[in-house]
Length: 504
Image (cartoon, rainbow, N blue to C red; front, side):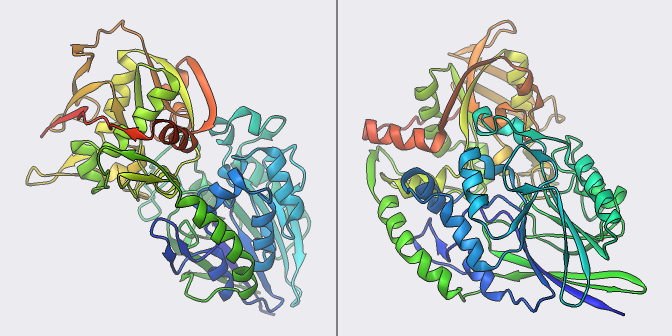
């Protein structure tokens, strides 16, 4: 007898609940409230989310910095959308255990996260029986890199274990329950290219390929990488991944019969319809957010428009200079490094809160490290990998920063350190000069470097930073530092220096 299950799956919505383009302040065909308008539950359906729900949009910035409702709002919205199960993403820990537990307490959906212990409201796995009698066993795991990225006080008392090991243990427990179908919700992506199978990273941050090859889950729902992936079967496991910001969701139709399991998944657009109850609930909150985001704070001596990522990396970015300027002011460090998101809004001369939270999109805090020339050269060499030359000798972005997804945010812009890079040379040997205060930096000179906590943990291909001595940690989010800096200074002159020089 053949039985069917339909899964509606979202992940990495990052606070995009409403159909709103916050950068342009207009309606857009995006958001969980639009995705949910397409969910149809016939009793043989599961609505599932893969985490990174609470952080990442101007709306959630306002919500967690100004509103008393905070975590109750996302919970209410997921309840209205009809979610059955969720797992946790690394960014769901950004506001601390108290806020996360408030969210889980208010949530109708069950939270499955087998590799996090000590958090109220979390289960390692669950078994549900559909109306057609199909017994479905589910578990969830999140990237065990959370302790490397998160502020210690936000996860104090929690234990994170290896995601692969926890998934394997949960699978064994589910099989003892004699389920017909096994599903793993993984807030993580693929360490191998899903087309060729080529290893892309062995850091352990993403383990999806290994889970498909070495574990025999029927379905693996993935996230974290923001990679649009549909209708893929790897090692006998049916897998997929939606992009971020609730622009699309996954519909997976699963069939379980005497001949085994088959599944077809497809990426579906959020569309232009909104769940009426969600729209009604969001309307006054969105009005408050808009007023907050459009409040002018200060004035720059020049507008800071974005350009193409390659152009900014090669020729310098005033936006990055401005961020580094704020970081140096806040930290007192000798030099600073920052990165830009893949989609950069930029600044008009009159700076609003909307400009800031839409341009500095990361929930990062600031760390200051003790570094020498060897560390700085390694960092500059990693960023120099961003560049490649085509057959005509023209500059282009290396595939290392484009696959399995665009990673423009892993290119770092420095201030206070003048570097010359020869792109014609081999990767790893491109940095030909590092100058500090007008002189070549000696091997034994020690400097203090401020940078975001994500990079300071060694993420993004900078593992050597993790071994550096931490001189200072500042728990305030960098976006809030920028807001405070602009509000204090009011009239700001942006550093015009081009700190990187390319030869090609």
